[in-house]
Image (cartoon, one colour):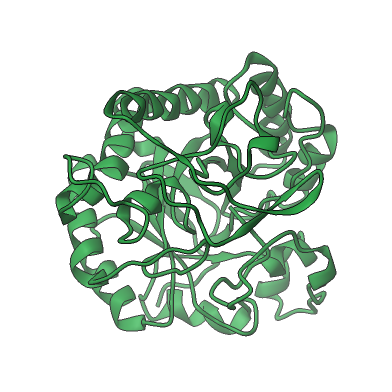
Length: 355
């Protein structure tokens, strides 16, 4: 029987254990450069005993930002700042991937420079609000991406991935979940296109697949993970026929030889098992445990083979040395919801994150 405390071979990289720190937006990149601070380095280094850390969501371009004070990977200043973070993690023996998160229509013009407005597959405003310097504001009608703009967005992901490697990250996770740009292309209610980027299942999955392909070609597939959250309604997302749609997505992603698939699970464990069976590579699960955060009882999912590795969010915030505490059966600090930034008011996600 495999346990969560055994090493895991991740595309040729040995992880010390199978406990993953989930991506969790912290909004601590203060200042116009949107670069991480020294506090960011301390925060991640404290949690370096995770087998794998997946960073907070990092925007791959200026227009990809959807929340205040979130960091980017599109400038030399940001690369240098992230290098201090990755150095701190590596000094503690940790492994860290950068999550590349383009928020698409989730955002607000007040967060963007030069008169930019958020973008999306189609000009459909989200029935959602976002944090801004002026408080919560309604999402605006986004600008529809032209085919040329779609290609440029893919190129932005590639540039950010190369910057991540230059900054010392061990790899990147492409964020295809939680109602952000890639899941917007997958959705029924945001992607109203009838060109090659929409209409059919093949059209809807194309953007995510092309991002993954381009990034894998740029930095190596062994350095690329992909995150999904089938059926997650967060950020006003509607999806239908999940087994077929996500089955097709995995069929298209599988030949790329990515490092892992990271599933943020919904209430349907049968869908999880279907995708687990279909995916031939490393499978990371952020299990559905509503209303509680993922806890030690979920370790059995590694033991019974449901997943290769297990992602924890809220419990990692409250317990920086979580792998040790899990192995010793506690004690655990209780996560404080007052410290959370964002999350899903419907209880779909079990961790305090927008990433």
